[in-house]
Length: 192
Image 1 (cartoon, rainbow, N blue to C red):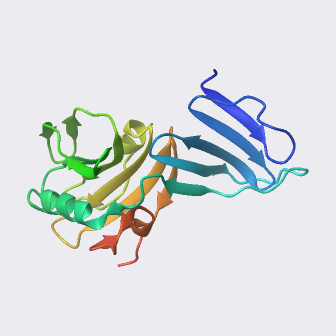
Image 2: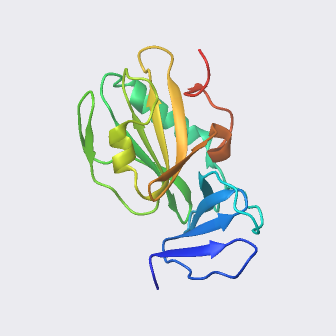
Image 3: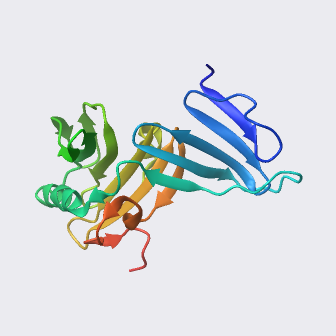
């Protein structure tokens, strides 16, 4: 099986299904789709008009249900306990549900080094005093099929930003798309 597939929406069946992800050409743009044991998703990667094809829409679904907001609260408290340094936490899926995991890590004000693990559903890291934004380094590091989050402005009014990554293509997500409960802090894209 090839790593990447492609499909023209409404015109033909999958021309070639990919092992990791697929491109879909549609009347309203180009999309990338992927699925694994944790989620199924489609992200629009280019807006354009392609005549003769059907429209397609972005979608995202957590296959195990939404993550309990209490796990985000635990992560936020861990970040607030050390607000001047970047930290990393992961939310994983095990047979008995979602869990939070903090690996050993080397931290600084602008960098984290840590070991990854399997079954990660959400990678969450803090930016310390820096605002909640995805840096160029984050874009370079976050190349898997996963949900990524960043919490920033920890010395002021903390904010969070979340996005879906599909092998280097990204789509912003709302807190409520991922967590079962209201956001306890501000979303990073909200106006001050």
